[in-house]
Amino acid sequence: GTARATVRGGRVAIGFRLERARVDGQVVLRLGLASSSAAIDELALGVNESWFTWVYNALVWIFQEVLRGIVVAALHEAIADNTASLLAPLNRQVGPHLPTLLTLLGASAHSLPWAFEGEEYTVLLDDAGCSDAETPPQPLGLKVNEATLEIRRVVLDSPTGRWRGEVCIGSASGSCSDRGLLAGSTN
Image (cartoon, rainbow, N blue to C red):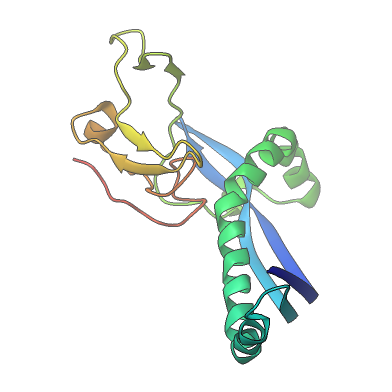
């Protein structure tokens, strides 16, 4: 059969904030996610062209509020999963202008909230993995979901595993600021 869904009164709201972060030893200004919400006033679902159309439609009618909640939850998850990919290009474009904006508003960078506790580091990769001028290239030590680029596991005996910092599991950027899920510190 075929299914048809109609949404009425659907809303997605994303709020940004100015924040500061420590990145590679320097304090940078950037936009971050302040809030997000999703809502659907009415979700109408219907199934056609099936031997069991009446059964499916009866179940949809019985569980329509549950289904609406599932769709709204999926919207919230999609917002959380895609925030980093939205903010990265936005910050590349807007970031250089944020100090001027603060000056025009009469605010200082010190009045902005921190994006998170700690520091972000940029790791440059070549075909062989992680390297710098003093060490030969070696694998970075992250197991990544290739479809989503989310970090799934940190190999303990690797540059990342030996690093005394934090890596966010389930994050496309490795930063805990875009997901808020802390995997833990390595020692």
